[in-house]
Amino acid sequence: MKARASLYVVVLIAAIALAVGCNKAPNDAQVSSDIQSKLNSDSGLQGKQISVQSSNGIVTLSGSVDNDAQRDAAARYASSEPGVHQIINNLKVPEVSAPAETAQERARIEHRLRATAA
Image 1 (cartoon, one colour):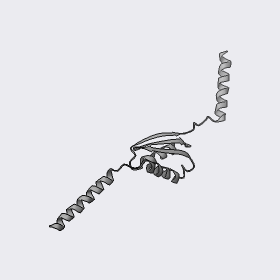
Image 2 (cartoon, helix red, strand yellow):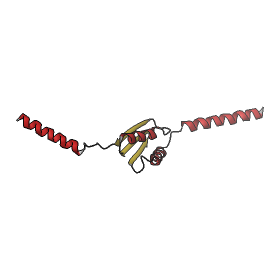
Image 3 (cartoon, one colour):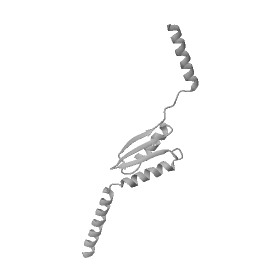
């Protein structure tokens, strides 16, 4: 009888410990560090200026990347981290400027339009 009671106590303590461990919120600094490590391990994101901040499950990504694919990849890494429930993706992607030929062509067309309008 005592052995059975002891077994129940041990099982109860284990269940409580497991429940407490599962409800523990992730540490913000650890979440940021884990995400930064994931970003640095991706060859397409290595060397990019990406800042990661975490607060109560909300992760903010800041900095700049080369294209939308890199921006999306960074957000996927952040959202895959346990305890993260919202991503604020402030990563900037530079605008692609028109090739010089296109700009020159546009200027030539505008010049012709002005000449015919006059």
